[in-house]
Length: 393
Image 1: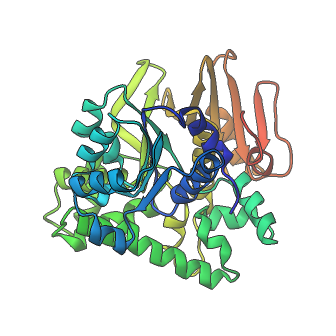
Image 2: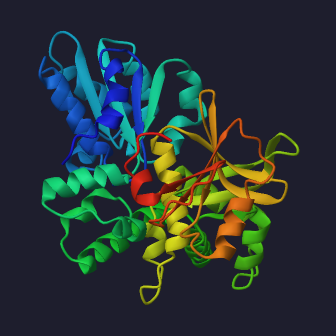
């Protein structure tokens, strides 16, 4: 497995800190591998390391609460500073209390979890200023290229647009095996985990919403508009239920939503959001007869790549014309439009006209899958294959 230095370099300055290091992200995105790589770094200078994986039945059977975890650590640590690594700790009853207690002593504590509740509620309120968090995502294209090179395989942009970046899938040679793996992964982390975790009784309604939302990445929605669609099959569906179920998907890092930003009002518009999948495979495994939604997956991929590059993103409402992203980092901001192609005149006019009346103080960018450079004097065109290998805009 490749070293994911993009993330490890962010954590490294805190190796010796008494701050709790919280590594989060969707299941199977590679958090455990990153933790193992951090352990390898630290093991070069000490063997006073304790690692526990709370998805391991042997661990769960013997360490069932906070008191038993604290006792285990005290019994197994060596003298001097001890480094604690707890993988998927949110499955342990009372894990918050254990972490709060252990950080008071001579430990450097690292935890991973696949639920954003690690970063919400009383735990982080009580730990205000005493933790740092790091979000891990499935592979972006640069990482796919590196991993495929390690495996002796080719990394295809089209393959990425369809099947995304969950690391494990690249170990399988056939598309059928990859599709089966991703489908089983979807069943586990999208359906079964959430139904069990949140004790969802209206399973059919929940599955209908999940399928609709994950097939509709890159669209602007309100809870009302989703409710209106779902009510065609489930008359008892309410806006509150929709909001609750969307919250479950976001807490598990399966989807993310970004707000619209209005040029006219100079503020966020709170009622409408654009929803993206953490990985485009969630869309593709729901497509029939290989009719994959490449256009919206391409936009979703650009979204994931921009986040990896460190940009804060909004949808930009330019007087009624939607620009896919207002991307900001520090004092720099970019208006970014995404399209599969602008080769046809109608598409060219639609996409480039979205930038109309925007001043030239910020860079205007369009990203497409075309091989021809369509840059103008005021709009920079970036070919998708080039964008995917860039470190920043």
